[in-house]
Length: 202
Image 1: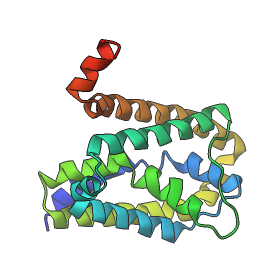
Image 2 (image 1 turned 45 degrees about the vertical axis):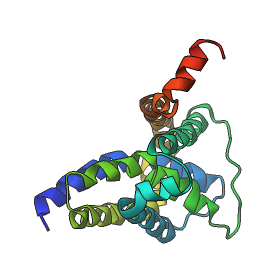
Image 3 (image 1 turned 180 degrees about the horizontal axis):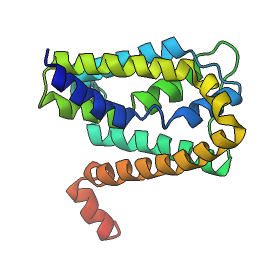
Image 4 (image 1 turned 45 degrees about the horizontal axis):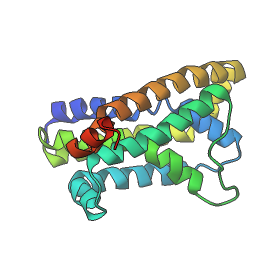
């Protein structure tokens, strides 16, 4: 195991996952009454990332999907989450009680192990050893668990005004990330023939 590589990969994944930036989203879900299981969310996210690391492209091909289509779908979900944060509207209807839907969607996916994370893992495989990537994933999951577990404590320190400001700011950032992800992948989803037909008005 190369320690330098592990920290380099961990930093890349940390930037992509952006768990700190997702604190307002997590707090907002909890305020809506969604039960978020920190350990389950962390373990599900880790499982998704490891599974995608080893079988990402094969899994997508099994369902007749490509990485670009996967990224576009994730971008759309992130876009609506950003709108919720900025405009105060509500698109997602969460189940209450013990249903873990809030933990898996949208916390584990797409906020943590989203399309950006998945495509990044595929890119990292071409440069680093799998074991180094696994170690970096584990480091990020520890941080993810801590942020999820102490999100209420963080909220108390920030106060309602601080949370409101963060929510708006990171909502805009989330929209920007979604738009960039969509822009970088949507044109790859459309085949040359479809592009030509569209231009001709077919």
